[in-house]
View 1 (cartoon, rainbow, N blue to C red):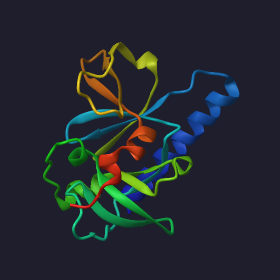
View 2: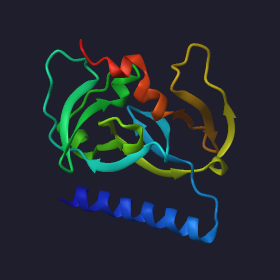
View 3: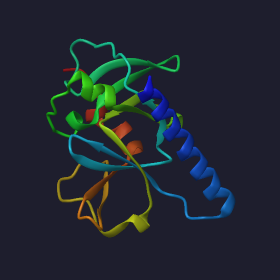
View 4: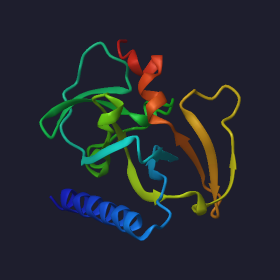
Length: 175
């Protein structure tokens, strides 16, 4: 219960900050920052939808290991994708770890009924939060954008959810 209230409070703060930035003409953050299996990702705000606390996911047989199943998110069914597993990591998921995780739905404009399982929300980020950047490495997936380095030396990988939602591997959930 406290986890849901904390998530709701975060959503309200994010919405308030975005609204204040729009009305005051301030620079608006470009990304929602998340952590998954010890890796840090930047998701474009225009591609991200609503954030949900972990909820029961109904497994779907004969699917890829990164496709966890379907969940009822506000009355709509969404496929749930473990972001870390999709990107090649093999995290061990405990019940407590899942209870602290979040589901990030894709923006409805992308026309994909899917949500990403992320371990932790790390707030909003703009380009001013980083000290350097580099283009995606050779052989990186098409949905990888620029990689950014913050002042603490942490590497943040931008993920283009619009490109991801159309990527053949993402669309092919059958095992």
